[in-house]
Image (cartoon, rainbow, N blue to C red; front, side, top):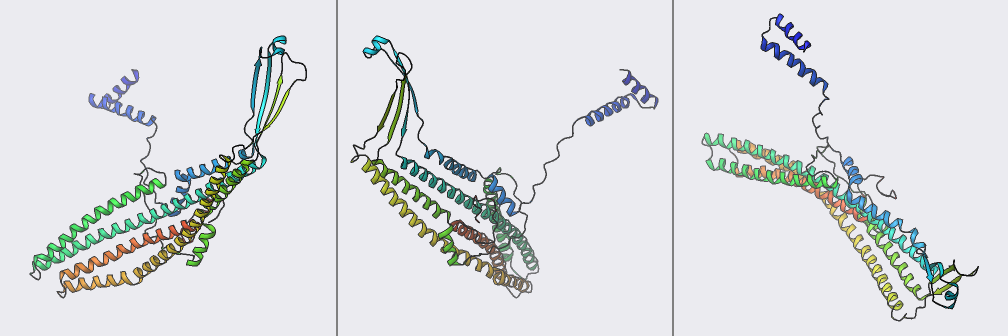
Length: 451
């Protein structure tokens, strides 16, 4: 109170009126209170541009499908050791009372015992071998999923790049049409052309507006799917760092692609391990004709002479082999034939797919070269000539629109072909199970380090 009165007195002496005397101390109090409060959080920074290698590494680290595939492999691998060991023994306690003359004379008798089932030893060996093959098959499925996610991420990255460039071309085409419309308006004003040319120009502008809206929607969808692959929110911004992405090139010819598919394909490797697993399971089925054993030990601990115990050895007899073991063996044999035929089919299909995808990738690469060296320069020259001819009255308006439309369609076709070219190469690499182009791939993603 004394401090407040002092402030009023000082300001009154300085000549301030009462209203100012009240406002100024309140302002000082608010300023000092604001200074004592913690600083507010800064504004959300602008999203940084994303390089293609960073996007791929982020997907490899955070994609839930890759994590699930690796977890499945870890689960199968963890089960291998247990297949070489028998099941848990059984511990039992028993009390006998008035069951025979001995218990009637000496009173109740208490027993404890333990029993253990032991399969024929070779069954443990083949069970472990089958689980090892199942673990290796799960590892190949994990590698296959990594290649598939890589294919989706890089395809989406190039797709977003191509769609962004196409959207820019459509917007540039809209500005070009506006310029053409102004030329048509100026020529109509001088009576050189009819109003029809101007109306055609406005019609083309309306068409371009529709195409721009559709392209914006397509680009938004592509970004949402790209964010899902990186385990991000669908609405997170996606900004690519490079304005122009390089055209990837193949590093294998057709024969090398087919040979690589035979030796490195994750799909073929998975089917090979599944065939080995089925072969081990068939061996187990054949061993079902051999006996399994049951060992048990029982010992009384009340109302019994010292050193009394019971030890039992039992074994199974495949008495109903004609109904059980024979049918199980036949089923295992049929599954083995199925696995071998599926492996043979996988080899044929994968090698044929590798050669087919290589042909597609090579063709799309050649087409891109034609776009860059011939189509785009020729279309640009034709448009410039048509514009000059129209302005001088030597060409009609329809010729000008056709040349302008042709140029932008060719440029848009280039980016569509680029996106398809990348998809062809990535599909080839997924099929052969090995990097076969200049597209990036993290070295530490695959467990065996194979690229």
